[in-house]
Length: 246
Image (cartoon, rainbow, N blue to C red; front, side):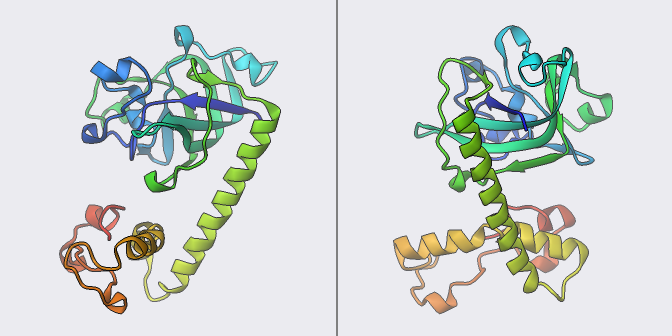
């Protein structure tokens, strides 16, 4: 599998939220909102990604010697510089199509975007993953360029990292789903999305503070999912919001 490394600005969600606009990633993001802000905004399961390449061109022939306009079945690894410094992997697109030149975002997709001038992309996929912000730890560096085709030894390390991370993530989902046997559909999906990172968050919180930072309770047996918006009064969007948790 060919790999393309793309450097973009740093964001928590990349879902089009202007309050979470990308930072770092080049001079453009200092005064404008980078187009990568929509890289993880789904439209019927399809994601339209963007990386700013030299002269707005990606040399797809380096990914597929027979390609000119586009290269298919590419693993795109998104990288960014943390707010505190240090470049890390933030997510990936599997089985992506990488275009040599900018493509126009379909009208039906633009209809759901608030930023109407962000109307082009150069990478598309329907198999994507965004690493939670606190788990972005795999360091990677390719200074002076936003698009890099990588070296073989690094590619192997990245593939191993992605495979291991995916396996561990899936195992956590399986464990959570075992405890959600009585739920179905929307509620089950919401619980898995919210709890998938609460296990690590809760553990780290208790190790550091030994108490709840909101109410001061020190009995760890009582420190369960609290301080949440009640499920009974949450709408569908809130139930599926990964932020509606601990």
